[in-house]
Length: 279
Image (tube, rainbow, N blue to C red; front, side, top):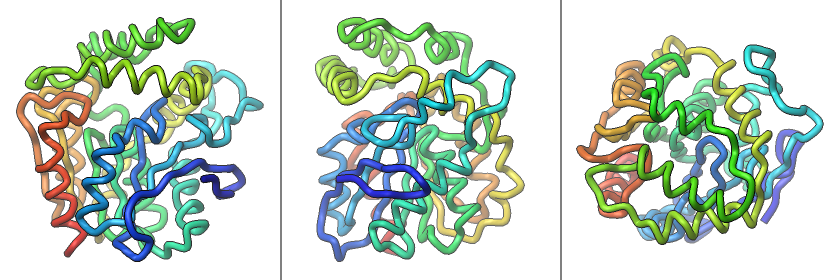
């Protein structure tokens, strides 16, 4: 499905009954809606949610802003997280949602935070997963930075191999990696869309969007912050800083969790989100 929102087209998919609690899932840097696993979306729907996952601008089947070109390091960003948050608000308009429970992972957590700041009446609850209030808060380890800034792979086979290598490093050391699933999702993501300049534009937006800490302190929204204690891409300090900034936020951390969502943790994650959204 596609919706016109904030001057672009956004691709999205939904799970669960239309009359259930609206839950918007926002994905991270260079990731696509399929990176929210189908089974996880079904589990969230079973808890009484109408789940919508979508492709951010410059990812997947949503609009790619090719005319903005490749960003130059240190130069102006083609757009900001503000614009990406406004995309999410525009999608909610298209869905007929006056407000929703919002869950964001990694860059998606930054977008979710920004959505709550810019459109406070639209966010019923905020769940920020493996994210941070600013790009300078809890920077990646050198090894994770090397993964983030590596030259893009050249083709489908290299994309799959690179994904497996990357998640072996930044994934969850406390859990056995599902290499078959990693390969499958990487291949399907490549087939849907492969656009390294789009990912670079998203990264430029992160770097140019500044620190949200003081604005997060003014939020009045029930919030859950989830973080892995072994995250190398956004270290645990990022989750702690987010929880400390949002008044009344609950911090939920998992030993052995890195920068992904291991299947064994899904029951605890889904239960925590459902408890928050049920009020």
